[in-house]
Image: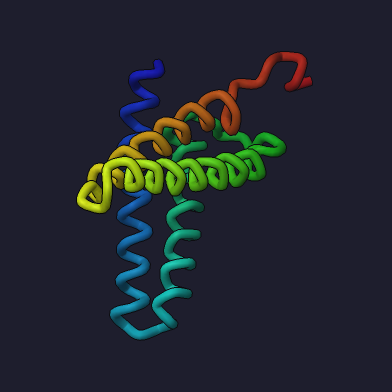
Length: 132
């Protein structure tokens, strides 16, 4: 089960980046809004896509469970902080020539934390007593 979820999570993550990128590029290309605002909106669109795709497809939660959206937001805020911190730490230790390495390691760690957090915190299976 966890292998299937992990595989779908990786597909959803890739699609999330695509949603972010395409919406950002579309807004910028057509001059709809300022570049910085476009990036913020595209990130939010990608995050919303990630929430619903992971809830419905990766973890199979078709019914809305109370608190999942807030747990998802809290998880994403924490993993964003972890991503930035790991990136900065690697750049500090390995110097600026390692930008790509720092990005990849930081992304890998935050993606791993996102999966773990979604599996056991955001979209966790609820016990029978919680359902009553």
